[in-house]
Length: 430
Image 1: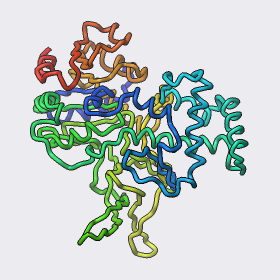
Image 2: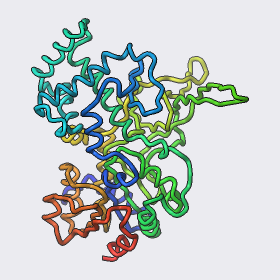
Image 3: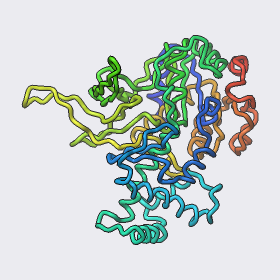
Image 4: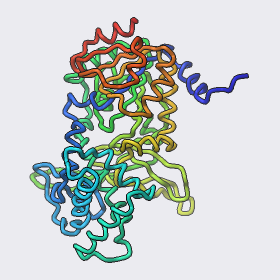
């Protein structure tokens, strides 16, 4: 008897759901760019030219870029050392590795560089020398002020700064669009039509929240939207600070609000998988447990607590699990591929593989086919099966993978906002 493929059970579960036809989407950064999400070039420029006055860093290590009207941190002097280190470490990297050419700075390649120092003991000579010179110049002492501590704190800051560039408060709103999301009406119309007789698996490589917002806000889509997270039975709460104005007086309030917990259950037709994580999801670690809990933080939600029942006191209580200050998302040109083996991402990628195997058609939007790990999965679980792909982008991606399967590739170079819904339906009819 041939060996049973590990994804067979998952595919069987998918196929028992109605409807029986399956369709897949894969979204890259080009999907979100028409709605104002920053380009890679913008992110590289903002981070590559970082100054310690560009961002705040509160004492609890919460970091983010200032906008033009942001209130300036009155305690900035306390965090000056970490902010100054961030500026100078990036400058050191550009001078050391890029020969001073700021135009060559790529934040994902840079991420690989300092993660390799932290966890793979690479670049130790140069990074060590930089940190020692930094300590001497600013007269910093203490056993905890060493290169690894500097870089661990920098990792926390850097990840939050990347996330802050991708936050759009509008995507957290609760509202409904009846004729599609502005600029994406044709796309929404096409997916609405496909949903009538297909399960639609939507896979995103983006950390931003545009499709999350479209999926739960557009009429004809939100009725079918599911992302594996749920409020139901979640014992996790976040603190929400807000201000109410009454008779011209401001009242400051703090309430606890329930947050969604990842269940891995996709019960509806429009199923959404963020393969590289998201700026709104955070891992929690409970004391005494090796299992990791994944929750979603809504806009403005701070510290996370778990509600539990204390048998000794006979009362409910709030426990505070450990969580990072930065969200869970994958970055780095090589480091993100190494993390595909993390339990949470293993589950997401198992879904991705099973969904590709079971889908009859695949539409790829705004993805440049530059991720080696993703390309290998597309080839192994879809293209080798002889199935068709519609690639929607503003130009044909330069990629050897597409050149190997020319008869299976259709192309629209109008981009997501200018490709008509007929292009989708004609592709479905192939």
